[in-house]
Image 1 (cartoon, rainbow, N blue to C red):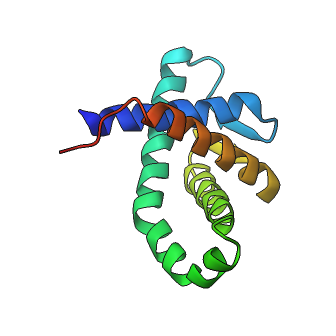
Image 2: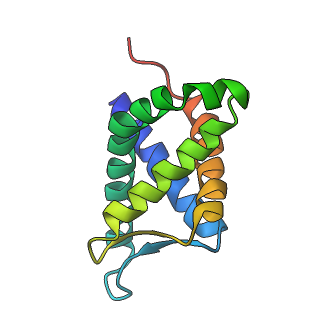
Length: 127
């Protein structure tokens, strides 16, 4: 249950980033309606979660000296790369996430991280 709540928070954070930033769009055909947009956003959140679970730990380990040297600010770059990778994976279909470039991905990653942190405080940890 907590995993589903965290996935919903991630989906909401991605949706907010797409609404607030000009370079991030969620591709949904116009005639499908709001239900399809919700399904697509949840699908993007699942891909984003899988990318963060599989690729991000390896990338963090390989870039550990840069993370230490930048006092953790390089983690924002890694988050932006994870968002770009998610966009690349989901753009292979007619539905998905489109990110214009690295700087847009950096701002999007910052929005997603802040929203996840703010709403994640309300969800208890799994015991």
